[in-house]
Image 1 (cartoon, rainbow, N blue to C red):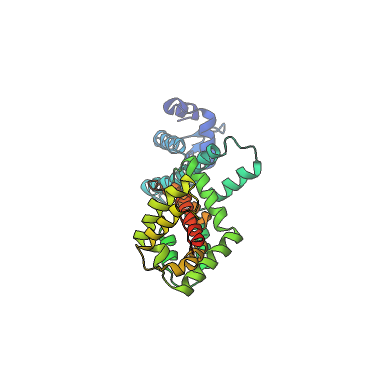
Image 2 (tube, rainbow, N blue to C red):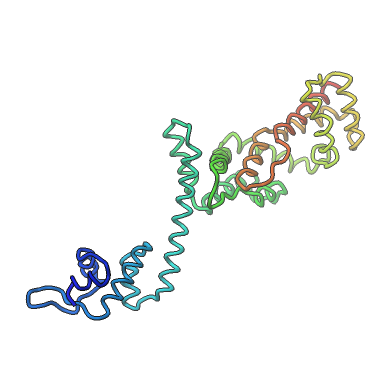
Length: 296
């Protein structure tokens, strides 16, 4: 049949059919004496398949592979699905970045957010691993294991809040001052060994329930009321009053608001249920340290 007849049978324009023919996915069987293309009886089905695959976004190279029996239609479809999935993930990230950026006027911020969120999952994980390597080195550490297991994992379809949280995490983990502070904390913990004062569950819970309200109420750490709280907390652990200054020193050494902020951000990225705000916890411990010093 002539190209006009093929166009009428397939609903495709003559221009499109010529393009397919020139691209090698719709070869003509020959030409007339006047030079017009002549197509065989299978051209209608072939043209319709090409149109369908093109509408699905399959490239001409893959279509040639299918029509040339170099690859099955199922294999090409599977490859295209994987490519579409990757593209969808990228589009979702880009959408979330733009939504997170709304309200800002800094082009540099948009570039920074884009650079950090379009990293692959492996590249994002590398930021966390580089931080852990810089802080803990090769020595096994329970804190390092916890941070590794609870590493932020940006979902494929993040919210603007998750994008903003991930960007803040990435910048925090690459901050030289934060790395240095974390390393000092790790080295001190390794040198002193496990201590029950700060980490003990019952004491920790009691600091939140006793020192926390006192801190929020503005109770003077040097007051008799504060001393009562200190003595109550000491009764839960083995710390004698003569060691109050040492306990306060340790609290100060292991209390950093940026660590608390890190876990808050990780919770946002990973979609964890919200717990007590880290700032409230740190306020409680800092007040307790001041009370220990005041009554040393």
